[in-house]
Image (cartoon, rainbow, N blue to C red; front, side):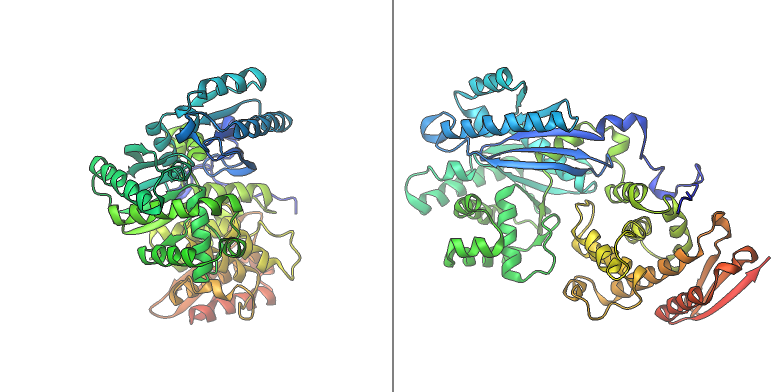
Length: 514
């Protein structure tokens, strides 16, 4: 298909005009960030939709720059060698990929080590990277901004665990509030003498001091950092959780306690192998889980969420103008996917208008899911027809998209499944449907069948594709079809319309108008 669908420049609805191709945002289309942490050194190159960027390149090296820092006051010599090698590689890769500038930051280990300035000078002299060493409060702020990139309306307490430090920051109304740092990173805790009892006493004392400064924080707790993600993987394994996506994974206090018990009684190598956790992360788990246990006991959050976004995403968020920060990351990512991969870029907007009469009472949170599904309805068209429904489901449930709860991923995925397949029984995704209640499953089916039908009515003049009217009390659904569109309403289209009506338990009626 070589057609394109024009969009009325004055009619974008509640989600605003698409920002794809906006010249003012061109500088954000590809941004490179390097995070020189106490435990790892990582480079990320962001690319794509500026408000919800894709990870064009993502690589890390476990260097342990902060190992032994408490005893020596200096960076780990072997870690410095590994970090220099990693940074040389990152500089070359970034150059080859057309990213001339790498925004490079260093955190606790480099800022605390007496030879930290010498390391930064060496990096600049030999590699050409200018390292910005951030203090603890700034590290906390950047990590909190990373969470805001993924959750624009997030509120609560951020806890970012690194190798040498733990940062806390409060967020609400799109802003970062109070923040502070502490020496509770696993590499620091590993050096404490006196065993686990002494370590836990130190954690308790430090955490109480942090509570005195931060105040009560009983909203959501967002966990940022590799040690927390590793803990979440083990929790998923213990629970038999069906969706292996860390971002927005939720845990309760009881989940945390039970997973700590599992770690304590299990063989570490066997458990890490089953959960997919690296050996270096697993070695630090005893220290991280003691911090987590005391954290939730001290601040008593109402629930706990894993954030895959942190300081690196915070650096990207830092460069965004406010009008971009205010956008919905899910919608912007979906628009970008449609523009890049759909056969008819722009048709998703008209499909959304076509199906919305079926969801007139939907709350705003549901409307954005419907909008995203319509934008994504055709992005997997290159897949083999026998597997297209499965590819669509995988795309949404596993994709690196922000602004989505796990249940919302499944909702969009199930809708897209029904976009390409009438029935969903007997496939391998059945366990994931349990993340949705029965009402949401039915809504996803209706949406999918409405998209499946609406996609058959595409016309160069989209005003001629017809309109739906739904009368829930009378259990009737009408298709008002212009005379010019009657030829596209063949027996297949009619069958899909009847299938939609059956999903709604409604009587179907077609009205043709001149």
